[in-house]
Length: 400
View (cartoon, one colour):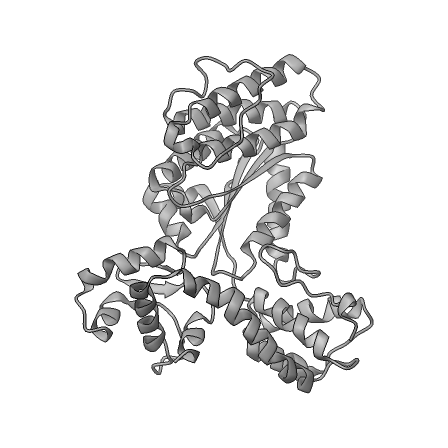
C-alpha cells in the first residue's frame, strides 16, 4: 500500500482523520456555546481519562467549535510546580485578540488590555521562571484591577472584563486547560472560585479542562462545590463499533477496505484505545499488499507497532523514572495480572505493593509521590494507585 496515502495519524494531540466515538461530547458543547452566548446559565466542562485516549484531541476539537462560533479562545498546558498566572494571561491575550478587531470601541479594548497587563505584571519572581512572554506593551497597566495578588480575586476581575468585551459582540470566551491535574491545589481552588463567580454573573466565559482520571477528585478537594461547577465527561477507549469506524472510514476515502477478521485482530491488539487504534492502523496499512486488508497483514505489522510503542509511548515514560520508581511500577505490574475478577492492571492497593516489595508502606511514599508527580500513576482513591497509561503493566511484564 502507498505509505504516502496512509490516512492514520498516531501522535500526541494529532487529530485522527475520523474522530470516532466523541459525537456526544461535541454535540453537548455546541449546546453549551449557544446557551452561554445567549446569557443562559451553563456549566464549564472537564474531560478526564488515561493517556492515549484522545483528551487533547477532543479538547482541541471543542476549541475549534468555539472558534467557528467566532468566540475568543486561548489554551494553556499546565505544568507541575509552575504558576498558571502567566499562562492564563497568555491565553486570555490570545482570546482578546480574536475579538478585539471586531469591537467598535477601541478605548474599551485598550481598557481590557490594561487589566490583562496588570494581571500579568502581578506575577511574582518565581512565577516568571521559564517564560519569555511579556504582556501588551502598547497600553498602560490598569491600577486597582486584577492586580491584588490574590489569584482568585484577580481572575474574577480579569474574566469579568474579558467576558464583557466578548459579550458586546454576542459571543463568549473559552479558556482551554490541558493537563489540568498539574495545577497546584491552591491555584485550582482559585480557578474554581473564579468560574463559580463568573457563572453566577451569567458572564459569557467558560473553562474547559482536560486531565488524568483523578482530576475530578483533585477539583473536589480544592473546592467542595466543584462537583456541581463542571460537567464531567470521562474519555475512555472506543467501543468496537466506533473503533471500526476509525479504521474503515479513513481507508474508504482511499478506496480501501478491511476484512472483518482484520478488524477483529486490530481490536484485540488495541482494546479500542485511540492512540493504539491509530498506531496499529498506520503500520497495518504500510504492511498490507492490497485491499481488502487482511488479518495476516495485521499480524505481520503488529511487531513493528509494538516496537514503536515500546520506545516512544512506553519506553520514554519508563526511562523518566528513578530506580526506586521503576521497582514500584514493576511491583504494580506483577500485581496487576488477572486475579480472577476479570480486571487487568486496575487500581492496586498501596499496601499490596508494599507487601510485594517486602517494605513498609511509609518507605515507599517518595517513589509513589514521584510517580504521581511525573504523571505515570494516579491515585483515584485513598490507598490505591493505577497506571495512567493503558497497557503499561503489560509492557513492564514483557521486560522480564
